[in-house]
Length: 150
Figure (spheres, one colour):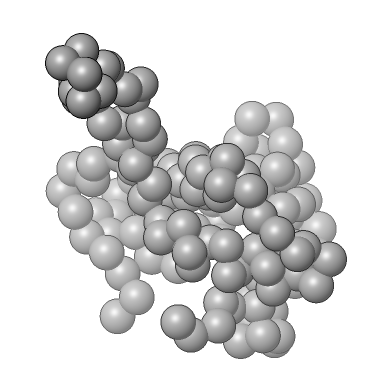
């Protein structure tokens, strides 16, 4: 439970639709610019963003930006967890691999510390990208940080 096994996992990528050719109803061909297809439902992203009481309206461009940055963040975290799993010669990425990967990258740990993990410093000789490794433990308040049901 809680694990995903894939022999060669495909990277998460933003899907870009090719430009489309339309008719402007006067017989002239019109080519629309390429559009980015979001990987997350934008209405759901908007609802999550509006959970912050300071946010009243969310621009459509902001929703797309949030989608793209979320995908990039998940790719970064998944790739780091994959490296940890491969170091340990495991074929399955487990929660412990994700936690270890996060603890090795200060930028991930700093981002996640208030919402998901309790962090305490730990000295270690193995550092990723010359960053200080920290010990992560699941937060007691984890259930409060998860997204609300749809």
